[in-house]
Length: 215
Image (cartoon, rainbow, N blue to C red; front, top):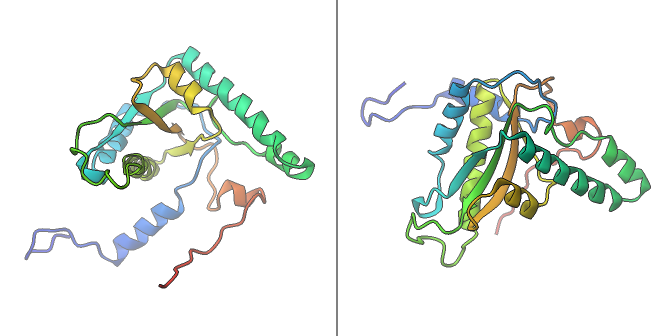
């Protein structure tokens, strides 16, 4: 519905309910089918990501589709090393629970996207970054979240793989030196669907209520 007085869209209760449903079903997916992702759907997700807010309108996000088997193998090897190190940092009981979790879909997901922040970008002319230069990276995170929601609207799942060495991944992808890795995403159709987060379902960490602090 469009408001006639202003020409702007009106988001009614039905839309808000559907939007809440989309948010609730945005899950970190680790279990993927190997079916290919339609190119049109992927391009739509990236196009919507370009509408995300960014400090000074700098738009510092840089998306790299990782298709080379050799480069994917390098990323998977980095995950394996980092995953072993992470498990070793826990005591025996927690380490056993950790190793029982599936924490990446690197071998099944048909699409791998490495998302970088171009920290040398001249776009935005530095506006908003003098006191908080990290806002460039935060801007990339907003684009990632947009991709995530857009993917869900296409029936796709996204898994953010953070158990990686950023330097190893960056080197394996041969990107410009000013690009900083923010996320490595696996994208594809989920092999299973659940209303609850996987880490809740497998008793790793319960959800907590959002706290609003007054000052």
